[in-house]
Amino acid sequence: MYRCAWQLRPIMAIQLIFYAFSFIPGADVYLAITPGRFFMPNYHLWTIFTFSFYNYSVFFLLSDLLTLFLLDILLSFYSWCEMLKFCAVVNLTTALSTMCFLFLGYAITFDTELLFSEKICGFIPLLGGLTVVARQTMGGKLLVNFPLGNIRYKHIPFISVVFAALLASLGITGRVSFMMFATGILVAWVYLRFFQKHSNGIVGDLADTFTFSG
Image (cartoon, rainbow, N blue to C red):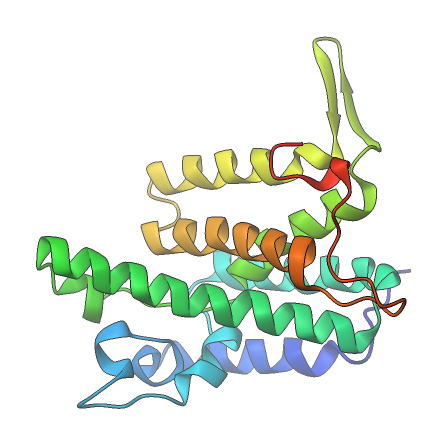
């Protein structure tokens, strides 16, 4: 029987509690990042610490729990310290990048919904980032064997982006969710490729099998 690592159980508990808060009207304003309220005059700066654990739908809650499940599996390749650093880099960088994208969208369209209706929350970027970890650690391994061709672990990020785009186009997820997922993949690859410090002193992973297109 699978047992989740004890370090992840408190995070799951916080996610469930924060999801319960989503039934309180206006709770998302104080738990998720709202671009138009993050800076002056509201200064909801604390949401940078709460947005990762908050979700407003069962679909995204289950998605985040799946992310923690995958995180636990992939921990065999990383120490807790390095995995925590990876999670922080991917989720925080993606959240700030998404907020910049929404501000840019507002500057072009003057659509105030981009600043006050769109919410940045959850582990969606981290889920995208974990597809990159799977590609880095098991890229050449066979995932599914089809008569028309093989799908390997290195194909997971691309397939995931296509699937996420399909969900967004069908209205199952929103544009911000897709933006966060795709950006999370890019941020994770840049970090693992060029900035991750290994115990042997090597920085990044410059293997030919871990190129952006390879």
